[in-house]
Image 1: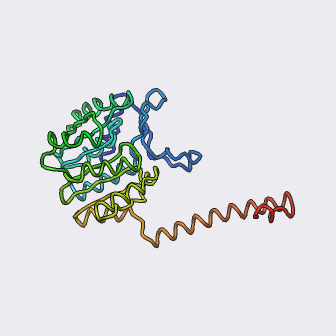
Image 2: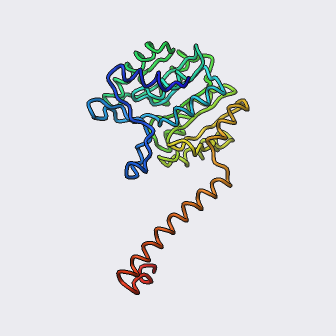
Image 3: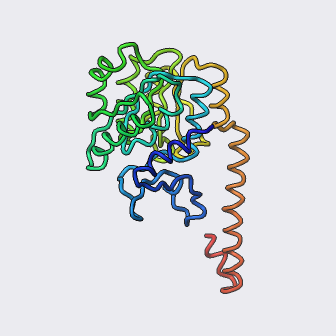
Length: 273
């Protein structure tokens, strides 16, 4: 059974409503519609949105194929991704979520995450601290034996994602992976290039995730690689989608030119120039 009913029920039991997985095309192109909103009394109550519904399902598929047991989350907000990973991971897995707690709800979210994890029977800790500074002490206390999976969803800047990767890379086991959220949405491709140059291997872009995640993985089993394939885009598939996008744009332009010709004969050439 999918983890989603348990995850949703845990928040609803505390009086929260969840909005997630909405299609931007149905919401006037609103690019944040797919992500997870924590709602109370009709108002969003957190500054940081959670990962999209489809991204939760991706994590569930990945951990079903590769049962990572030592997991670090950088960036917690209200615990949505940490609890999703905790539910997807095998029984007895250890997970720590690190958050700077810079806004009131993020700090409250640390205790909320731990309380809900306890109710769900998960071995999840949520701690306050900054990456990369807090990582060495966190590792010594919680993961002296290393890490299997790191989920990076903290400060979304090119410089910070490289710092986050450099902080965790020495502790990563094999097989192991670092998963980066919001790469496409936040223009973090230069950060991925810097990570790839330092690692000697480029992170893999997962285009079928709502935020455009990327993953740098080593020695994953074939079943996990098959999951990554399912969320990636081949060159041929990319070309087909790009052709469809060009056709859509051209069709709109042709409609505009026809409208101009009808309203103002002779002016479409001027508009084209």
